[in-house]
Amino acid sequence: MKQRVGLALGIWLLACGAAPPLSFVAMAPRFEAATAEYRRIWQDDGRLIVAAMEAATGGSFPLSEIEVLVRDGAPMISFDGRTIRLRASTHRAYMKATLVHEIGHRLAMTLPRSPELDDHRLLYLFLYDVWTDLYGRDFADRMVAIERRIRAPYDYDAAWSWALSMTREERRARLRALSPRLRYAIEEIAP
Image (cartoon, rainbow, N blue to C red; front, side):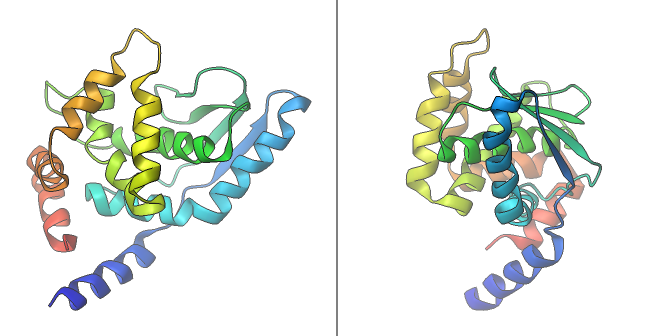
């Protein structure tokens, strides 16, 4: 039974992992190398990233183009989800984590919300599991430790503590409770 579920999940991931087009733009010539690296990450992992997010949330990733601006500055996504800003001066592992984080915000924009879920709490219901599925638990733990230390008005540490106080199954149940549409999709693919 477990093998059939795993096979079905694998087929579903391959079928649903259509990555939206990302247009990478260096905001200055000195950011060209970092821009090329982000582009490589997306070319190598984009379909897997999208498939892992769709599997974790039960949602469908929007296929509209996203412009990715690479410069030095805090990573963020625009309010409409059409533009992502990424930091140029960082190492490859953090580039991967940040790209997945910001792309996760784009998917989270399509998900229903409840009053206690701000942008990051909603994202953190699936981001840790996506990082784990893509790059392993050690990677996910390292990235959470980094994000907990972000200095900003938003309390990333509290949001991560909230999300990680739940098991993967409990986080999945929180997502499932948001919508009957998500409930059906998650139950169909859950291992």
